[in-house]
Each structure stands twice: as structure tokens, then as C-alpha cells.
View 1 (cartoon, helix red, strand yellow):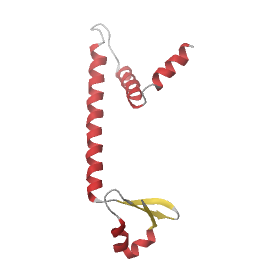
View 2: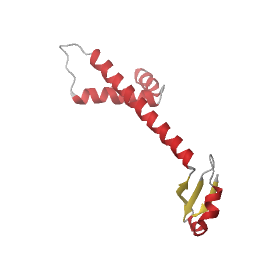
View 3: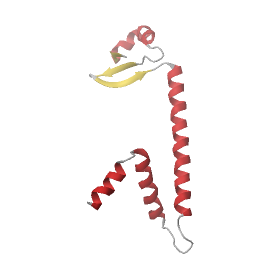
View 4: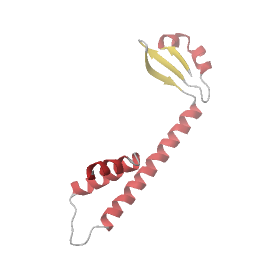
Length: 109
């Protein structure tokens, strides 16, 4: 990892030579991280991973919604807010496994 002040871009060829796969160049402005130059292959790989995670998340959310609806009897109706709360609760558990269980155990105690 290389860290350089943004002013080094005046000599951008030197900065670009330091950028390689797996070796981003971080540019600072007033001493703080402001920009990152990454190799195009790393960018494409990162975007593919982000899209894959988005698709997995959407699929998991859909499955959880179907599960909530399946477990709701015909006489019982869920409001949009109740469905949203149920999905949010599930999302939190999916993002942070174990935290939800710990919170429930604390409530019981």
C-alpha cells in the first residue's frame, strides 16, 4: 500500500507506476485519505464481488419474506410495518449472527 499526497499527481506517471494489482495508491488531501487509485483488474473484481453480494442479499431477503408470509395464517394479516420489522430483525441477525440471540437472552434474564 502506497500513501502519497494528492499534489504528487503533478507527476502522475510516477504515481501510476506504483499502482499494481493488489497495491492501491492512497492519495491524501490535507493529511487525510481522500482518493484511491486501484488497478483496473482489482476494480472489476471488487465490483463483481459487490454485485454478487447484492444478489445474495436480495435473494436472502426474498426467501425471508416468503418464510414470514408462509408462517402467517390466512386469518392473520400482517401490516406493511409488521412485515418490515420482521425482515429488519432477520437482516440484523443475518448481518450479525449471535447478537440477536444475546439480546433476547438479556431480555429473558
